[in-house]
Length: 387
Ligand SMILES: Cc1ncc(COP(=O)(O)O)c(C=O)c1O
Image 1: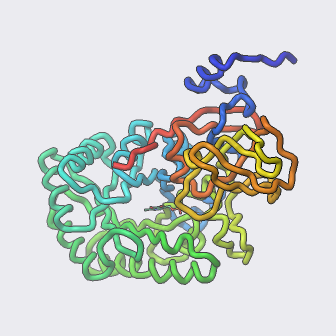
Image 2: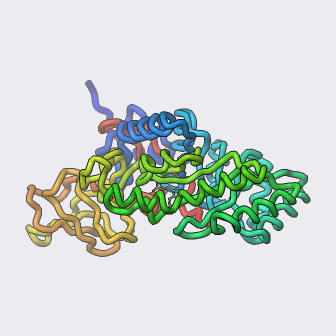
C-alpha cells in the first residue's frame, strides 16, 4: 500500500476545507489541536438519549458545550427534539448551520437583541426564548406585534443558580401577565440548577437537585391548576440526568457536557459510589507535542493557557494515565512534572480538558477522529458567540 504524503501547505488546505476523509491521520494535525474521539462521542450520545427516552422524557441537549451545528444536527437525527443555545448569537450560529428546535436558555434583553430575536423567530418559528420579567415579556410582545408574529416563551425560574424569577406565586403571576400578551405563547418553564450538577457525591447531588427542581415542578402544577397551559418543564444536566428524570412534571432534559466530559465532571462521583464519574466517556482531548526538555524531569508541551480552560483549579489530565502530571507553564506551554514514563521531544501527548465548554471556545475547529483517521473537521461556529 502506498501512503500518500502531503506538504504542510496541502495538509493546511485540506484541514481548512474539511477535505480530509481517508486522507489524513492524527499525525498530520498541527498541535495544539482539539480532537474528538467520534466513537466515544457517539456512544455518549446514544446512551444519554436512550436513557432519557426510557424515562419517557424528551431531550434537547445544550449546544453551549460543543457550539457545532454538525453535532446538534447529529443529536436531532438521533432523537433529540432540538438544541439549547446559551445566548442569542449562539442560537443564530446554530440556526444558520441548519439546526431546528432551538431554545435560547437566557433572556434576550435590549432593543437590538429583541430585534434579532424576532428575526430568528421569523427564520425558525418554533424557537423558544426565555423571559423572567413582565417588562421584558412586554418588550418582546411589542416587537412581535410589530412583526406580526407570535413568539414562544419559557419562563426562566430561579432555582438557586443564576437568573430567573422565583418559582411559585411570582412565576404564576408572570404567566398570567404573559397570557394577556397576544403575541407571546407560553411554551413552558426553564429551570437549570447548575449548582446541583457539580455537587460531589451522588446522594448529596440528588438532594441538592431535588430541592432545587421540586419547586419548578410544583409551579408547573400550580399553573395547570389555574387552567394555564404549560406544556414544558425543561432543565437538568449531565450531573443530574439520572436524578431529574425521576421528577414528576419535568418532561425535557437539556444536558450538554455528557458528549465530551472533562476533568471537572469526572470528579463528581457516580451513582454506583465510584469516585470517578464515568457514566459517559471522555471524548474530547487536546493533542500536544513535547517541544522542549530543559530539565529531564520537566519536559514541556506546546499547550498552555491559550489551549485549555483555566476557570477550574484542576489541570488537564494525561489521557495515558497517572504517569504524567501537567502544570501550566504560561500562555503557550505546559510542564510535565516528574514523568514516570519516558518522554522525548517530538512525542505527541493527549490531555483530557479541565472544563469542556470554555476549552472548546478557544478553538476554531474540532478535528473528528475515528481511531487515528481524521474523519471530519467541524467548525466551532458558536465560538465567541457570547452576545
Ligand atoms: C441553562 C443550562 N442548561 C443545561 C446546561 C447543561 O449542563 P451540563 O453541561 O452540565 O450538562 C447548562 C450548562 O451550563 C446550562 O447553562
